[in-house]
Structure formats: structure tokens, C-alpha cells
Length: 252
Image 1 (tube, rainbow, N blue to C red):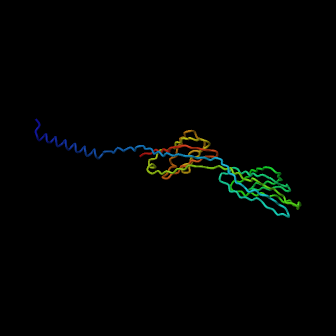
Image 2: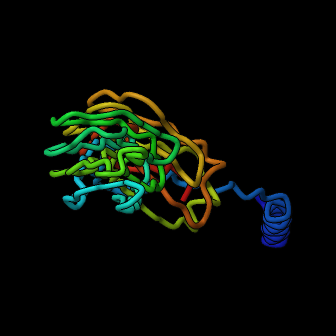
């Protein structure tokens, strides 16, 4: 039979052992890292972009132009400022009266035409791209001192054909997403799809060319920063409308 003193000894020894293991366990305890939860940020957007031809008429005044030794001379002079992306400038007028004593000289930029014109309608393709000074004037009748060279012009106009651009621009900020940024892509769905699309993020080209009805464009995450700008533009003869989502995946 175990005595009370022996039993108390075993009990005390057991408690000491438990205490020792408890202290050692706490000393060697390794914390299990908490895995960050993957998160997604979605930015919806809508866009309408185009770059289509547009024609505009600049009306020039009706004039009777003369040039002769005894009669003096005059000229039709008109400065035309051209829009960006001008493709073509067409000059049209009607000669309604002329004595054809001398050629009619037409100058516009590096374009020059000089010839005798009978009555009729005339059209000239000019070479201007930024700004052109149009000058129309007869040469002198010279030895025909009894009359000047004469041209009466009606319905004169310059038809400017240029590409009109409509772009879409979006700005967005990222903060904590940059710390655990893993991937990003741009998903686009088109209601209108004609021509070639140009998409840029912070100056880096994401896409340049034709697209299908739905496009997913991967984004190089090194191009992303705290402040970001996404730009959609259309190439010549192109038009797009639709919506999209910028999807950013990161660790929360």
C-alpha cells in the first residue's frame, strides 16, 4: 500500500514535469504564417472612339480678275488653316466669263497651275497639310493694251477632307493593390467594331490592330503605378463602341 507521503511525492514530480514541458513548448513554438487572401479589383468602363473622314467646304468670294498694262491687276487671295490629319484639299470654281488673253495662275503651297481656261467648271487637288495661301490671278495681257486678261470666277470653294478623331481616356488610382500585385488584364466587349484599335496604358501600347467581338488584353504589371491613365484611340477609317473591365488581381 502506497503511503500518503509517497503519493504526494509522485504528484509533485508530475506537476513539475508538466510545467517543464509547458515552458519548453512555449519556447520552441513556431507561429504558422497566415496566408494572404487573393483579391480582385474590377474597374468597369465604357468607350466610344472613332477616326473618320469629314469634309468641310470653305466658300471663296465671286470675283472678276483682271491683269493688263493699262488697267492694273487684282487677285483672289485666301489663307486656309487646315485641321490636323488633313488628307486632301480640293479647289473648285466656275469660269463664267473670260477673254483668254493670258493664262490663269493658281498657287497654293507647293501647288502651281498656269493655263488658259475656257468657260466651264474646274477642280484642282492641292497639296496643303497645315496651312495654305491660295492665290488666283491672271497673267498680264501684255501687248494687248486695249484690254486686260479677264477671268470671272463664281462658286469658288475649297473642300477640306480630314480625319476627325474621338478618343476615350480613363484615369484610376491604385494604392494597397500595388503591394501584392499579381496580374492584371483588360477585357473588352464591342458593340461597334470597324478598323484598328489602339489601346495604351501609361504610354505603353497594350494593343494596336484589329479586334474580335470580345478581347482580353494582358497587362504587364510593371507598367502600373499609383496613378494610371488608360487611353483608347482609333486608327484611320476606324470606329469602336463598347464596354470593358479592368481586372486587377492582388493579395489582400
